[in-house]
Image (tube, rainbow, N blue to C red):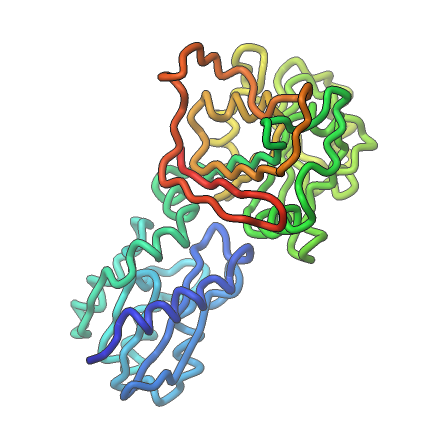
Length: 356
């Protein structure tokens, strides 16, 4: 019996090769099988370039005729950055198409199109795994808002810095490398102005030699120093502020090449929901918030966080800065509960992952 799951698992693994390079498109892998042998493989390598199905068809050549295609996502059936994959699949002589999941993009109706064209079709093989792989794409397509990860790095007693503000480094090199990989994977990283002023971070992916994400700074009064490390690459910086920002400073930052967004204020701070809307309109499909405590608390309270990643180091700090502020929870039974919680060890640290 043909193991559909086996071949689909290979397609999902291939899809991961596009991580960090295809957004706001999804990660997609494709495998073409004929008489029990893989004759073609492909994945979506970069936004705007050919889709996984086309790359797999090219690899298979004439062997694609009368073969079975396994693809992570429903093939596109419309003209966009590239021509429709459904046409190429039909032209390539593919007999059967096995799909892991539907495409939430309303423009895509490839599964029905292929069925209509007489191909044997099946959908839902390893659907759950496929959805997990593209959770950011799914949310972005359905809401036009980015998928938001809140990342915290703290001591075992919940501190992100000592009472003097020292925070370098609470977690191990292995954990920091993991975070740099995450920075490569997402479209943008976000921090509050207090983190910029206290830590002066670069917010890049240097430990994994990955792509550097867009850096979003939430700075309600535009207090950022023009000598901040993040402004070494100003064209990759977006500063969200309010009408409290001095006009001369907005002009200076624009001249440097940074983008300054003036948003409405909520309780004196940047309206973070409005910011998410603006980021979505700029085709930013995923964001990782990296602090500080005020921004983290505000993000949770406003309900914009989808996933929480907590790196906990086996260290005790005592008096220090709390990881999350201003949630206003007075009773334990009102505490926010994480869903789908998993834990694992990274270096000497522990990573707790959960959904909100």
